Image: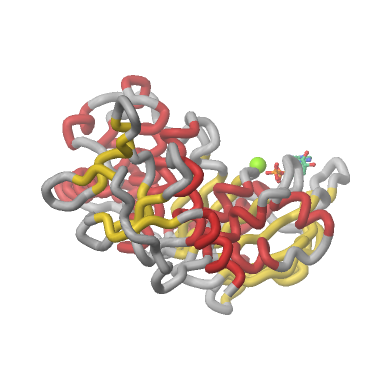
Amino acid sequence: MIEFEDVTKQYPDGTVAVDTLSLRIPSNEITVFVGPSGCGKTTSLRMINRTIERTSGRISIDGEDINSKDAVALRRGIGYVIQHAGLFPHKTVVDNIATVPKLLGWDKRRARTTAMELLERVGLDVKLAERYPAQLSGGQQQRVGVARALAADPPIMLMDEPFSAVDPIVRNQLQEELLRLQRDIGKTIVFVTHDIDEAIKLGDNVAILRVGGKLAQLAPPSELLANPVDDFVRDFVGRDRGYRALTFVHPDELPVKPLPAELVLDDAGAPVGWRTDHEVQPVNAVYKQGDSLRAALDAVLTSPNGWGVCIDANGRAVGIVDQVIVAEALRS
Ligand SMILES: Nc1ncnc2c1ncn2[C@@H]1O[C@H](COP(=O)(O)OP(=O)(O)O)[C@@H](O)[C@H]1O
Ligand SMILES: [Mg+2]
């Protein structure tokens, strides 16, 4: 656990970037710091690895004050990922990833083997190993940045807006991959973003900060959406929070209506499309029993006729859901 106790950072010009911040960051989970520009996210994050020194208060890791350790030793246990990946332009991908292991004195072969494994782990083709960063796309560079931060297997990862500079589609892929990776590695991740949707998607816990570096609310996403503590948080999480909150409602089994004749199935019973007078329209999104109510509503809202197709674990269509079914499930 990382703990902030009354932590304040005042820059030499007098700016108070972080003001008596107290919060706990549980181990092996993702905690997201989110808030408007200038609210002290980066400063808070960088005080953890002491690339910025706090002015007062205490920051501890597993009970031990981080100032009681040598800063270099401290940073060995903390991976750091930033926007634009911060890769070394003159080093190949594999050498970038192996940077820290080499600094730690690992022999070359072991550093390289680890780097190649990590390359695959973050979803990159090993063929990219000998390329230089400029020869990669933005999304690929970010993946290399994550692999590099993981190379020495640090228990803690700090990530400062790592996905903010890539387009929404790639950003979405990177988010999914981070969640997948985290299921395997279970690091203590502190992730900074200004994007509340990203925070809600990635965070086990989300800390919303306001300008001046004050904590507005720290809670799991479902709690933030359901019970914002004040108007600032309510505005920040947005007006459509009712819709987003559906993400966290997982009915065991939605009552479904029987399959209508218009639904075209393939031989295996999977939905193919909706038959209309002159064509078959694709089934855009399906709802898998057990998924969230938001997924059910998405299936309904993207369907050409307002019927969302419900499938079982084998992909076979078992019934349809509509807005009424979703609304009733929400009420119960
Ligand atoms: N080196 C610095 N000197 C003076 N003020 C700074 C410095 N770095 C950041 N600040 C100020 O501290 C506040 C918080 O900055 P920062 O932590 O970078 O915010 P965020 O990452 O949330 O956008 C801002 O008002 C910013 O202008
Ligand atoms: Mg910042």
